[in-house]
Structure formats: C-alpha cells, structure tokens
Amino acid sequence: MNQPEIPLLGGTANRGQVVRVGNTVRRPQRRTSPAIHALLRHLTDIGFDGAPRFIGIDSQQREVLSYIPGTAVTPPYPDWALTDEALVSVAELLRAYHQAVRTFDPTPYAWPSSPPESFTGELISHNDPNLDNVVFRAGKAVALIDFDLASPGGRLWDIACTARLWAPLRPDCYIDDGRRGRVPDRFRLFIDSYGLVDADRSRVVDAVAQNHNWCYDNVRSSAAQGHLAFSEYWTAAATERADRICQWYLENGQALRAALV
Image 1 (cartoon, helix red, strand yellow):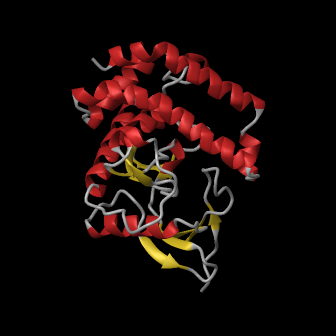
Image 2 (tube, rainbow, N blue to C red; image 1 turned 45 degrees about the vertical axis):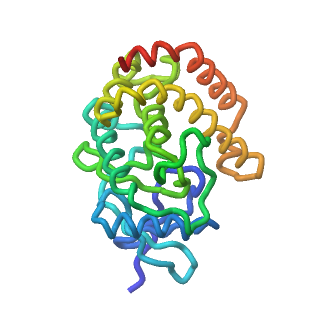
C-alpha cells in the first residue's frame, strides 16, 4: 500500500520539500549529494546512531533516509530545548559525531563550500547545527540531521557554529527567553561539556565571528540567486540584525574569551 507523505517542518533551503513516508524521509538531491550519502554510509558502518541512514533513491529521484524518532526544535521553541541540560546534550552529541567522522576519507567526493582555510583540514564538519537540525528524545539531543552543507572543515568550526546558535551568542536584545543574561555562562557550559582543550579556547572565539559572517554570506548569496525562502528571510531587518550581531562580536570578543578561562 502507498503510504502518505507527511511534510516535515523546519529548515529553509528545502522548505516544503522534505516529507516523511512511513519510517523514511524523502529529500531533494543536490549536486553534492553523493558525498553526503558516502558520509552517512560511513557513520552507519561504524555504528554511529546519531545521524540518519542513507537507504537509497526513490522513483522521484529523491534521497531516502531513515526517519529518526523524536522532536526537532522548531519555533516556537519549547522551554525544555533551551535548558542547560539540553545544551550539554548537544555538546556531547557534537563531540560523538566528531569522533565518529574522523576516520572518514572525503577525498573521492565533490563537497559543498568549505569553511575558511584556517578552520579546515581536520574532518567533515556538519556546518549547520541549527536548532531544527537536532533531534531530541526525552529532553536529550540524540541525532543530527540535514547534512546538506557538510564539507571538509574542522571541530572548532562546528563548535563555534553550535555555540553561536545554541548558547546563543548574540546581544540580549535578540534573546527573549530564559537564556537572556546568561550568554557567558552558557558559552562556558557548552565548551566545557564538549571538552575543548585550553589551546583551542581562544581560537573558538575567532571562529564564532567568522562563522557568523560565513553563514550569512551563504544566505545572502542564495537570496541573490533567487532562492524564494532565503529571499523572504533576507529582509532589511535581517540585514540590520546580522550587522549588529557582527559588531557585538567585535566589541565582546575579549569578554567571551574571559568566560572560557
């Protein structure tokens, strides 16, 4: 029997095009999809269960992935997703992914754009650990999804991006929940929970600012190319917000470093 296609919420690039069919997820393919499929096969082969399994290609030429039971964090964000316990579990999940992916050889494949050279050469970073790309069960992060932007990168790049989005690292005027006023403490908690060594703690602050610019450059470029969802997002207000947060990083870099000492 044909099973119904249930739209899955979250995400921007593939908005409205990702569906659940039974215990599978169907998603559009990209030019670089063969690389992502190889990465997911590697994670399955070594027993890492914190990512979808690649199953194949369906009759509509969509990639077929395993469905991971749980809840991805989409607006309005539930209180449980913004707790310190949830933040710690995200750090632990990211560390487990990095341990699992370090033995994967990316050289035979064509990948999406990589992070700046100073943050590459170590492993395949996820590059998009946004709240809606983490699956939770019972308040604990159990899986990363949406590997479309994964590419040759490094641990610090993923750590910086995840902390930036989850702590979150931004002015309090852009935080309207219980995390407001706790930026330094949650930044420290995330870094400690991941287990980042002292030698990298100063560099991760530099990575945060560069990651912010890199991510918004991708949004800006996609909007300029006519991608509808990104064009709708990239308004004058979004541009102003991005610029103000960038300035905040410049003004608070030393305070963020001090939080990690």
